[in-house]
Each structure stands twice: as C-alpha cells, then as structure tokens.
Image (cartoon, rainbow, N blue to C red):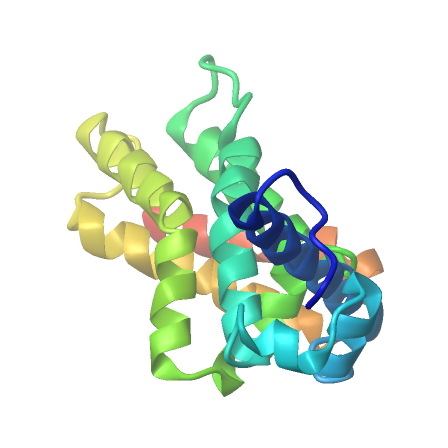
Length: 202
C-alpha cells in the first residue's frame, strides 16, 4: 500500500490529486501535451501509473480538470484592473490585447489549450469553453454597453460580442502556428483590434 503523506486518507487523496495536476501542468508547458505521457506525470508525483488511473481515466481528463481549476482565476486576473475611465472602445481593445498576449505566451496553460483544443473530445471542448466563459461574457457586456451608449453601431449585443470573442480566439490560433509568435503577438493584437473596430465604430 502506498505511503500515506497526510493526516488522513482523504487528505492524502486530495494532495495526490493536486500533485498530479501540478506535475501535468509543468510538463504540458515544458514539453507539450502530446509529448507528455501518463508515465511521465506519475514519475514526477512518485506514484505508479495504476495509481494515477485511480484519479484520472486518461490524459485528456487531467488537462480538462487543470483548465477548470486554473483558467477562471486567470481570466479574472486578465479582466481585473481595467480603469473605469476607459471608453468602451478602449476597454474592449485592452481585453482583446490581454487575451491574445495570454494565449500566445508559450509558458501559459492557455497556449497549450489553444493548440490541443481541436483534437479534444466534444465533451472536453465544452467543459473548457465553460471554464473561460467569463471572457466572452465580458466582451458581450462591453459591446452591449458600447451599443447602448451610441459608441458602437446598433448590432445585437450578444451576437456582436460572441463574434468579437470568436475573432480573438481565431487570431490567437493563427498566431500560435507562427514560430515568431512571441515577437508578433502585439502586432497581431493591433491587427485584430483595428479589424474589429472598422466594423464596430459608430
């Protein structure tokens, strides 16, 4: 029986689960999702693969739970600190820039998710979308308020916001296929902002 590393079996299980997620996140960032095996994760945690299966059925489930655990906080940090004095256009521009910069930085979970998302199961894709729902929801809110204030054209705010959010994700996906992504992310951010506002400006 594995050595219990906590005051109770339940605490031990929680700690082991956390260690698995921590190890997986580090490995996914360092060597990629595809280059990481369950054996690699188990070895870092100090457990056998059989024990790892008691916590997660496969690698995809580890990635999804990692996203669900970390991404809401990341999105909250991304949206935090926007000055109240910003116009709706400035606020939306800043959110788009922050989103593109985040997913374009190799050492972030966001870049791993963007690369792997098309290959994940539909169920996993839904869970990941739900985990970062605060970002498209904020974009929709800014579009709605900008439309109500007359700063943006009178589109359906829900549709406009979702389209803008999809454009940001698409631009990020394109950038991630660029070997020079880190140096081009601000250029791409500027391009998507200008593209969006050619259609949204009142």
